[in-house]
Image (cartoon, rainbow, N blue to C red; front, side):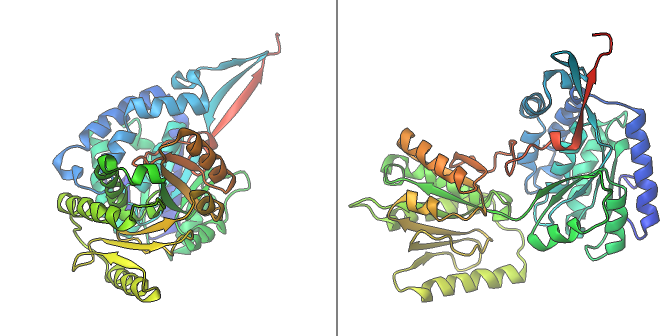
Length: 418
């Protein structure tokens, strides 16, 4: 593990390590079919006690399954790519080849993101150099330890290097960038812009997944149904709890379309029960002081801004439900703080989206209405429109782009004998 993940302090260390993984990847072509076998075993090993409790690992285990990833490879690269075959296209043939070394700059607030990003590049046959934010060091060591455990022939681990260094070490970021043929960049606006200014080679391909937020919407026929209310609330609670509401796909607000004779406060009481239950099953283990302060401020501001606003929360900062009215998305607080807004018309809600919404979770009783809302949301910049309860299902396109294909070269060969 010392060679796979280690603290670095000089550009030379990064350059030497990158050269090593580049040579390994170039010398040993590996097909997605073989990689998927290793991933399947890795996912199973992550269910062991020392890793099963890491936030996001249940999701990572689902992601690593062959029945999850094989359809993605086929859709993005073609069925023949599974076995490294050429695909016929008229008088030519096509084959996916790796771009070389892919650098990964993951966000520091999602425990599994360094690994998740890396798997996308590995499926393209690339070597991967993934910077590990310091706060994710211990979790990543445990997760990658399971890969080392199942990858006995070092088919994958020989082409992976994961340096640990502070985010303000510009010289080390530059060393990674100069050695990269591609990059997958995740995180907030400041972090993304900082990485994009690095000295990448002119041929390097950049896939950028910047800061976006997600919301949910329910029409009157869905949220007012007493028979289904409990089920919807459990789904919402799980969406909020997963990734501690820090992922781009985490719902920050949910809009309830008004219905005569029904009151959003009744729905919120059912939601409170679901939040309490989820909190018992998955209690918060730790919280940053800054987040505690932000949650307290959000509660106070919400109640003071409008006398009609309501809030439901326990004595501690474990979770918060803010109830109000309107069609605008409140400023996200995160920390399991969900705004519930009663709106006159969901069409008006969607029309106010500004392109910063990544995922829209929908609970719509009328299929034709759902198609109308989905089409409008797509025009307003939303990249993923899914059933409420599936907002974290990580399936490409992600943010409107593929995950594997950007980091491969589709080589075209036109046979001279034809």
